[in-house]
Image (tube, rainbow, N blue to C red; front, side, top):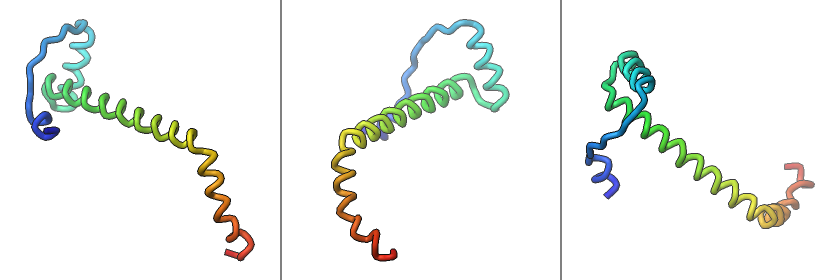
Length: 85
């Protein structure tokens, strides 16, 4: 299903201020891309960044929520401290 969605393109219409269109066109020429491809790439990168941020936040929250358990379970390995390892 995800592959199917990645392959499917749908046309949308959005209104953008002229200055943004100007900047998009300028950047598209600079990177040898069409305006549409550049917009797709920028949106994809932004979405991926947001998803990474959400994952990082969930990992941090999980670590904080389990800190006491992690700390206590780490004490089980303290016996190696005096072994010269």
